[in-house]
Length: 322
Ligand SMILES: [Zn+2]
Image (cartoon, rainbow, N blue to C red; front, side, top):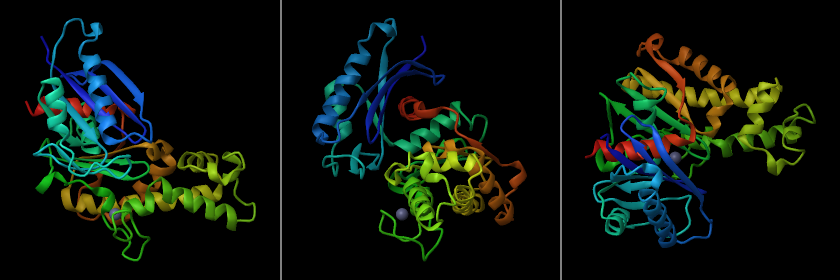
């Protein structure tokens, strides 16, 4: 019978666990909210409880999972299965031996991976990148994460940190990034940058933009999604912001095309839901800046697996390391 793996996607606000088969199909999934006040020990216990109950769930019809993959939103030591730096989670995650803790509690082998590398693997095997050989994955939300597939395999690089595409520098004179550098793609094109451009536009345009109306008149409620909605409805300032964001992303992707010449670039995450108002300026920038890679053969595609990509990728990663 087909093997099953358990995948875990640890997010900033939730934990998802799922039993996944070798075709990337989810048999069972459970999602639980994560209290922002939880310490890392409690979060690990919550993961273990969810995995235990999933493993024993009668819905699996007696099928056994034999390994676990865990994706986390941060920097990890993949070889040792230790978390090093998870900026958006409460608790002290520096040097936490997650692999030892989970393997000890569940008596099953576990692999630890970065969540966007998991997203990239899932989209490559089962989603928008299916059939490609060299792929770049980008997830744009509060931050920008990435992943690289080279010759059909996830390229993890020295210490497993290859693919931190959000920290490619786009503008050496740009704003400071959370990583300590200046002008990274993440500092220019993730949702906090979009929101701050939108708030500035509302304040400076003397009523010429309707962005605030999309956020119930409350500037604190402006999100990347409200800006995208205003842009889709033709709001000039919102279109201008999405054009700028698409330009920054296009410049970053252009650098990746020069470096890797992939056959596919898959873009996901909350910001990518903006659709054509974002993809169009990305394509336009690529046309203007890519002169070496064969752009006409490179697919620039929206991610297809939605929020499930993380758990599917984590489980698939575990299966692939068997
Ligand atoms: Zn950075």
